[in-house]
Amino acid sequence: MTKTLFAEFTAREGTEDEVARLLREYAEKVREEEGNLAFDAYTKASSPRAFWIFEVYRDEDAFQAHLKQPYGAPFNAALAPLIEEDASVLTFLDPLT
Image (cartoon, rainbow, N blue to C red):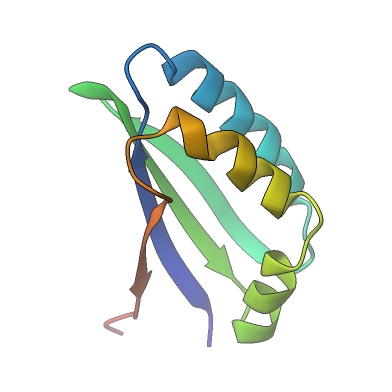
């Protein structure tokens, strides 16, 4: 079964462009992972500091492999001081059908 999640966070005032740059670079790497099926990042149209990421991995093993990639920790470390939350808020999703 696929592993699907929704991550969200809010950029601090004035950091939106830097957050977007970091996220674009990170997305390129994640999309190259063998087990990644989707990594789509968005900002909320009415609130451009709100970032939403929709991620799908082939299965739990692919998701665990994603978590072990060497670029994940540096991305999160660079992101942490730029966002309002302590970390991305993750919501794991289950399909209805």
